[in-house]
Image (cartoon, rainbow, N blue to C red; front, top):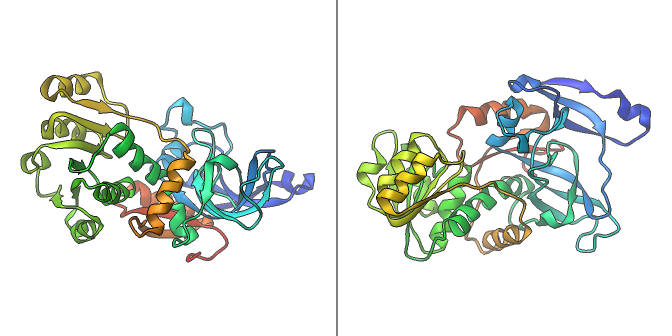
Amino acid sequence: MTEHSVSTADQSGARAMRAIRIHEHGGSDVLRAETVPRPEPSDDELLVRVRAAGVNPIDWMIREGYTDEALSPSLPSILGWDLSGIVETVGPDVSEFGPGDEVYGLVGMPDPGEAYAEYAAVSADEVVTKPAPLSHTEAAGLPMVGLTAWRALFDAGALRDGQRVLVHAAAGGVGHVAVQLAAHAGAHVVGTASSENEAYLRELGVDEFVNYREEQFERVVNPVDLVLDAVGGDTLERSIPVLADGGRIVTLPEPPSEAVSETARREHNATVDWFSVEPDATTLAALCSLVEDDHLRTTVSGSYPLSDAATAHQESEDGHVRGKLVLTVGGDRST
Protein backbone atom coordinates (compact mmCIF):
# COMPACT_ATOMS: atom_id res chain seq x y z
CA MET A 1 0.00 0.00 0.00
CA THR A 2 1.30 3.44 -0.90
CA GLU A 3 2.24 5.71 1.99
CA HIS A 4 1.17 9.35 1.65
CA SER A 5 1.46 12.40 3.87
CA VAL A 6 -1.08 15.19 3.97
CA SER A 7 0.92 18.33 4.65
CA THR A 8 -2.08 20.41 5.72
CA ALA A 9 -2.23 18.40 8.92
CA ASP A 10 1.20 19.63 9.93
CA GLN A 11 0.79 23.18 8.63
CA SER A 12 -2.49 23.74 10.48
CA GLY A 13 -1.04 22.70 13.79
CA ALA A 14 -3.81 20.14 14.31
CA ARG A 15 -2.89 16.88 15.96
CA ALA A 16 -2.42 14.24 13.31
CA MET A 17 -3.23 10.55 12.96
CA ARG A 18 -2.80 7.73 10.49
CA ALA A 19 -5.81 6.68 8.40
CA ILE A 20 -6.72 4.72 5.27
CA ARG A 21 -8.38 6.90 2.64
CA ILE A 22 -9.52 6.64 -0.95
CA HIS A 23 -9.29 9.55 -3.37
CA GLU A 24 -10.84 7.67 -6.28
CA HIS A 25 -12.76 4.48 -6.90
CA GLY A 26 -10.94 1.38 -8.05
CA GLY A 27 -9.03 -1.71 -6.94
CA SER A 28 -7.27 -2.23 -3.65
CA ASP A 29 -4.37 -0.10 -4.88
CA VAL A 30 -6.45 3.07 -4.36
CA LEU A 31 -6.30 2.55 -0.58
CA ARG A 32 -3.82 5.05 0.80
CA ALA A 33 -2.21 5.13 4.24
CA GLU A 34 -2.02 8.83 5.03
CA THR A 35 -1.36 11.30 7.81
CA VAL A 36 -4.49 13.39 8.34
CA PRO A 37 -5.83 15.72 11.04
CA ARG A 38 -7.32 14.00 14.05
CA PRO A 39 -11.11 14.57 14.28
CA GLU A 40 -12.56 16.75 17.00
CA PRO A 41 -15.67 15.36 18.74
CA SER A 42 -18.79 17.50 18.80
CA ASP A 43 -20.82 18.07 21.96
CA ASP A 44 -22.59 14.69 21.81
CA GLU A 45 -19.66 12.65 20.53
CA LEU A 46 -16.72 10.63 21.82
CA LEU A 47 -13.21 10.65 20.46
CA VAL A 48 -12.29 6.96 20.36
CA ARG A 49 -8.73 5.71 20.04
CA VAL A 50 -9.42 2.88 17.62
CA ARG A 51 -7.79 -0.43 18.49
CA ALA A 52 -9.44 -2.47 15.74
CA ALA A 53 -11.78 -1.96 12.78
CA GLY A 54 -13.90 -4.60 11.10
CA VAL A 55 -13.62 -5.24 7.36
CA ASN A 56 -16.92 -5.86 5.58
CA PRO A 57 -17.79 -6.50 1.92
CA ILE A 58 -19.55 -3.13 1.80
CA ASP A 59 -16.15 -1.49 2.38
CA TRP A 60 -14.61 -2.75 -0.85
CA MET A 61 -17.87 -2.24 -2.72
CA ILE A 62 -17.69 1.45 -1.77
CA ARG A 63 -14.00 1.50 -2.71
CA GLU A 64 -14.93 0.20 -6.17
CA GLY A 65 -17.89 2.55 -6.51
CA TYR A 66 -20.53 -0.18 -6.71
CA THR A 67 -22.90 1.11 -4.03
CA ASP A 68 -25.93 3.35 -4.27
CA GLU A 69 -25.96 7.09 -3.58
CA ALA A 70 -26.78 6.65 0.12
CA LEU A 71 -23.48 4.83 0.64
CA SER A 72 -21.30 6.89 -1.68
CA PRO A 73 -19.24 9.25 0.49
CA SER A 74 -17.59 12.31 -0.99
CA LEU A 75 -13.91 11.83 -1.76
CA PRO A 76 -11.38 11.67 -0.27
CA SER A 77 -12.97 9.39 2.32
CA ILE A 78 -11.85 7.25 5.27
CA LEU A 79 -13.50 3.82 5.04
CA GLY A 80 -14.96 1.59 7.74
CA TRP A 81 -17.91 1.44 10.17
CA ASP A 82 -17.08 -1.32 12.68
CA LEU A 83 -14.76 -0.36 15.50
CA SER A 84 -13.61 -1.22 18.98
CA GLY A 85 -11.44 1.09 21.02
CA ILE A 86 -10.82 3.25 24.05
CA VAL A 87 -12.50 6.58 24.78
CA GLU A 88 -9.96 9.39 24.61
CA THR A 89 -12.18 12.42 25.29
CA VAL A 90 -15.91 13.13 25.45
CA GLY A 91 -18.03 16.08 24.38
CA PRO A 92 -19.69 18.24 27.06
CA ASP A 93 -23.12 16.64 26.52
CA VAL A 94 -21.85 13.08 27.06
CA SER A 95 -22.37 11.64 30.54
CA GLU A 96 -22.52 7.86 30.00
CA PHE A 97 -18.86 7.43 28.99
CA GLY A 98 -15.54 8.79 30.14
CA PRO A 99 -11.88 8.65 29.13
CA GLY A 100 -10.48 5.14 29.36
CA ASP A 101 -13.79 3.33 28.77
CA GLU A 102 -13.67 0.49 26.25
CA VAL A 103 -16.44 0.68 23.64
CA TYR A 104 -17.49 -0.97 20.41
CA GLY A 105 -20.11 -0.27 17.78
CA LEU A 106 -21.32 0.31 14.25
CA VAL A 107 -20.84 4.03 13.77
CA GLY A 108 -22.14 6.64 11.36
CA MET A 109 -23.90 4.41 8.85
CA PRO A 110 -25.02 5.34 6.22
CA ASP A 111 -22.80 8.40 6.69
CA PRO A 112 -19.04 7.71 6.77
CA GLY A 113 -17.97 5.96 9.97
CA GLU A 114 -14.26 6.57 9.30
CA ALA A 115 -13.15 3.58 11.38
CA TYR A 116 -10.00 2.81 9.34
CA ALA A 117 -8.01 5.28 11.43
CA GLU A 118 -6.16 5.72 14.70
CA TYR A 119 -8.98 7.91 16.05
CA ALA A 120 -12.67 8.31 15.24
CA ALA A 121 -15.26 10.80 16.45
CA VAL A 122 -18.45 8.83 17.06
CA SER A 123 -21.92 9.55 18.36
CA ALA A 124 -22.29 8.50 22.00
CA ASP A 125 -25.59 6.74 21.24
CA GLU A 126 -24.01 4.43 18.63
CA VAL A 127 -21.54 2.61 20.88
CA VAL A 128 -21.79 0.55 24.04
CA THR A 129 -19.34 -0.95 26.48
CA LYS A 130 -17.18 -3.59 24.81
CA PRO A 131 -17.97 -7.19 25.81
CA ALA A 132 -15.43 -8.03 28.51
CA PRO A 133 -14.57 -11.54 27.19
CA LEU A 134 -13.63 -10.19 23.77
CA SER A 135 -10.38 -8.59 22.70
CA HIS A 136 -10.69 -5.39 20.69
CA THR A 137 -9.90 -7.42 17.58
CA GLU A 138 -12.77 -9.83 18.27
CA ALA A 139 -15.16 -7.06 19.28
CA ALA A 140 -14.51 -5.07 16.09
CA GLY A 141 -15.72 -8.06 14.08
CA LEU A 142 -19.15 -8.14 15.71
CA PRO A 143 -21.19 -4.92 15.25
CA MET A 144 -22.23 -4.95 11.58
CA VAL A 145 -22.69 -8.70 11.25
CA GLY A 146 -24.30 -8.96 14.67
CA LEU A 147 -26.81 -6.19 14.02
CA THR A 148 -27.54 -7.58 10.56
CA ALA A 149 -28.09 -11.12 11.80
CA TRP A 150 -30.29 -9.96 14.69
CA ARG A 151 -32.51 -7.79 12.51
CA ALA A 152 -32.76 -10.43 9.79
CA LEU A 153 -33.78 -13.17 12.22
CA PHE A 154 -35.93 -11.41 14.79
CA ASP A 155 -37.20 -8.17 13.25
CA ALA A 156 -37.64 -8.87 9.53
CA GLY A 157 -37.76 -12.66 9.99
CA ALA A 158 -39.93 -12.84 13.16
CA LEU A 159 -38.15 -16.08 14.13
CA ARG A 160 -39.66 -17.97 17.06
CA ASP A 161 -38.77 -20.93 19.22
CA GLY A 162 -39.31 -24.23 17.40
CA GLN A 163 -39.27 -22.81 13.87
CA ARG A 164 -36.95 -23.97 11.12
CA VAL A 165 -34.44 -21.54 9.61
CA LEU A 166 -32.12 -22.00 6.63
CA VAL A 167 -28.95 -19.87 6.77
CA HIS A 168 -27.04 -19.56 3.51
CA ALA A 169 -23.28 -18.89 3.70
CA ALA A 170 -23.54 -20.03 7.29
CA ALA A 171 -19.78 -19.83 7.96
CA GLY A 172 -19.50 -16.23 6.75
CA GLY A 173 -19.65 -13.03 8.76
CA VAL A 174 -23.41 -12.67 9.13
CA GLY A 175 -23.99 -16.40 8.83
CA HIS A 176 -21.83 -17.57 11.74
CA VAL A 177 -23.53 -15.08 14.07
CA ALA A 178 -27.01 -15.91 12.75
CA VAL A 179 -26.47 -19.62 13.39
CA GLN A 180 -25.65 -18.95 17.04
CA LEU A 181 -28.51 -16.48 17.57
CA ALA A 182 -31.06 -18.80 15.95
CA ALA A 183 -29.88 -21.83 17.91
CA HIS A 184 -29.99 -19.88 21.17
CA ALA A 185 -33.55 -18.80 20.32
CA GLY A 186 -34.61 -22.44 20.05
CA ALA A 187 -34.83 -22.70 16.27
CA HIS A 188 -33.88 -25.74 14.19
CA VAL A 189 -30.96 -24.45 12.14
CA VAL A 190 -30.00 -25.63 8.65
CA GLY A 191 -26.76 -24.18 7.28
CA THR A 192 -25.16 -24.21 3.84
CA ALA A 193 -21.39 -23.98 3.43
CA SER A 194 -18.43 -25.89 2.01
CA SER A 195 -17.45 -29.23 3.53
CA GLU A 196 -14.49 -27.88 5.49
CA ASN A 197 -16.89 -25.79 7.58
CA GLU A 198 -19.21 -28.62 8.69
CA ALA A 199 -17.56 -29.40 12.04
CA TYR A 200 -17.18 -25.69 12.79
CA LEU A 201 -20.85 -24.96 12.09
CA ARG A 202 -22.13 -27.94 14.05
CA GLU A 203 -20.14 -26.62 17.00
CA LEU A 204 -21.89 -23.26 16.59
CA GLY A 205 -25.34 -24.87 16.60
CA VAL A 206 -26.26 -26.08 13.11
CA ASP A 207 -28.64 -29.07 13.27
CA GLU A 208 -28.49 -29.91 9.55
CA PHE A 209 -25.57 -29.19 7.25
CA VAL A 210 -25.68 -28.91 3.45
CA ASN A 211 -22.49 -28.91 1.42
CA TYR A 212 -23.54 -26.50 -1.33
CA ARG A 213 -20.75 -27.71 -3.61
CA GLU A 214 -22.08 -31.27 -3.69
CA GLU A 215 -25.82 -30.93 -3.00
CA GLN A 216 -28.61 -28.71 -4.21
CA PHE A 217 -30.14 -27.47 -0.99
CA GLU A 218 -33.63 -27.22 -2.51
CA ARG A 219 -33.56 -30.98 -3.12
CA VAL A 220 -32.53 -32.04 0.39
CA VAL A 221 -33.95 -29.45 2.81
CA ASN A 222 -37.44 -29.92 4.22
CA PRO A 223 -39.68 -26.82 4.34
CA VAL A 224 -38.42 -23.99 6.55
CA ASP A 225 -40.15 -21.01 8.13
CA LEU A 226 -37.34 -18.57 7.39
CA VAL A 227 -34.47 -18.29 4.93
CA LEU A 228 -31.60 -15.91 5.64
CA ASP A 229 -29.95 -15.32 2.28
CA ALA A 230 -26.51 -13.70 2.35
CA VAL A 231 -25.69 -14.83 -1.19
CA GLY A 232 -28.36 -13.46 -3.54
CA GLY A 233 -28.63 -14.24 -7.25
CA ASP A 234 -30.06 -17.63 -8.07
CA THR A 235 -29.66 -18.71 -4.43
CA LEU A 236 -32.51 -16.36 -3.59
CA GLU A 237 -34.73 -17.74 -6.36
CA ARG A 238 -33.89 -21.35 -5.47
CA SER A 239 -34.86 -20.69 -1.86
CA ILE A 240 -38.53 -20.11 -2.67
CA PRO A 241 -39.40 -23.83 -3.10
CA VAL A 242 -37.91 -24.57 0.34
CA LEU A 243 -40.36 -22.29 2.14
CA ALA A 244 -43.24 -23.51 4.26
CA ASP A 245 -46.58 -21.86 3.64
CA GLY A 246 -46.51 -18.35 5.06
CA GLY A 247 -42.73 -18.39 5.36
CA ARG A 248 -40.26 -15.57 4.94
CA ILE A 249 -37.03 -14.90 3.10
CA VAL A 250 -34.74 -12.14 4.29
CA THR A 251 -32.17 -11.39 1.59
CA LEU A 252 -29.15 -9.21 2.28
CA PRO A 253 -27.18 -8.43 -0.92
CA GLU A 254 -29.82 -6.32 -2.71
CA PRO A 255 -33.58 -5.71 -2.81
CA PRO A 256 -35.55 -8.56 -4.39
CA SER A 257 -37.10 -8.10 -7.79
CA GLU A 258 -40.85 -7.82 -8.03
CA ALA A 259 -40.88 -11.11 -9.95
CA VAL A 260 -39.17 -12.95 -7.08
CA SER A 261 -41.50 -11.40 -4.50
CA GLU A 262 -44.57 -12.27 -6.57
CA THR A 263 -43.43 -15.88 -7.02
CA ALA A 264 -42.98 -16.26 -3.28
CA ARG A 265 -46.45 -14.80 -2.63
CA ARG A 266 -48.12 -16.92 -5.28
CA GLU A 267 -46.48 -20.26 -4.47
CA HIS A 268 -46.15 -20.11 -0.66
CA ASN A 269 -48.02 -17.04 0.58
CA ALA A 270 -44.52 -15.92 1.60
CA THR A 271 -42.69 -12.61 1.84
CA VAL A 272 -39.22 -11.59 0.67
CA ASP A 273 -37.67 -8.73 2.63
CA TRP A 274 -34.51 -6.64 2.41
CA PHE A 275 -33.20 -3.93 4.74
CA SER A 276 -30.23 -1.66 5.37
CA VAL A 277 -28.48 -2.16 8.69
CA GLU A 278 -28.20 0.87 10.99
CA PRO A 279 -26.47 1.66 14.29
CA ASP A 280 -28.47 0.27 17.21
CA ALA A 281 -27.04 0.52 20.71
CA THR A 282 -29.89 -1.48 22.28
CA THR A 283 -29.17 -4.52 20.13
CA LEU A 284 -25.41 -4.08 20.59
CA ALA A 285 -25.98 -4.29 24.33
CA ALA A 286 -28.07 -7.44 23.87
CA LEU A 287 -25.29 -9.00 21.79
CA CYS A 288 -22.82 -8.04 24.50
CA SER A 289 -24.91 -9.89 27.11
CA LEU A 290 -24.99 -13.00 24.93
CA VAL A 291 -21.20 -12.88 24.57
CA GLU A 292 -20.71 -12.46 28.30
CA ASP A 293 -23.10 -15.35 29.01
CA ASP A 294 -21.10 -17.55 26.59
CA HIS A 295 -23.95 -17.88 24.08
CA LEU A 296 -22.21 -16.01 21.27
CA ARG A 297 -18.67 -15.81 19.97
CA THR A 298 -17.07 -14.13 17.01
CA THR A 299 -14.65 -15.78 14.63
CA VAL A 300 -11.84 -13.63 13.29
CA SER A 301 -10.13 -15.63 10.56
CA GLY A 302 -7.58 -12.96 9.76
CA SER A 303 -6.24 -9.76 11.31
CA TYR A 304 -4.02 -7.24 9.57
CA PRO A 305 -2.31 -4.03 10.67
CA LEU A 306 -4.04 -0.89 9.45
CA SER A 307 -1.36 -0.35 6.82
CA ASP A 308 -2.28 -3.75 5.30
CA ALA A 309 -5.88 -2.78 4.51
CA ALA A 310 -5.34 -3.61 0.84
CA THR A 311 -4.47 -7.22 1.70
CA ALA A 312 -7.58 -7.52 3.87
CA HIS A 313 -9.73 -6.16 1.04
CA GLN A 314 -8.23 -8.63 -1.41
CA GLU A 315 -8.98 -11.54 0.92
CA SER A 316 -12.53 -10.33 1.49
CA GLU A 317 -13.11 -9.97 -2.25
CA ASP A 318 -11.88 -13.51 -2.85
CA GLY A 319 -14.81 -14.75 -0.73
CA HIS A 320 -15.03 -17.85 1.45
CA VAL A 321 -13.88 -16.00 4.57
CA ARG A 322 -14.82 -17.86 7.74
CA GLY A 323 -16.25 -15.27 10.13
CA LYS A 324 -14.62 -11.86 9.87
CA LEU A 325 -11.48 -9.99 8.86
CA VAL A 326 -10.24 -7.19 11.08
CA LEU A 327 -7.70 -4.36 10.89
CA THR A 328 -5.70 -3.75 14.06
CA VAL A 329 -4.38 -0.37 15.06
CA GLY A 330 -1.22 0.13 17.09
CA GLY A 331 0.72 -2.87 15.87
CA ASP A 332 -0.66 -5.47 18.32
CA ARG A 333 -2.63 -8.11 16.41
CA SER A 334 -3.83 -9.73 19.63
CA THR A 335 -5.24 -6.52 21.10
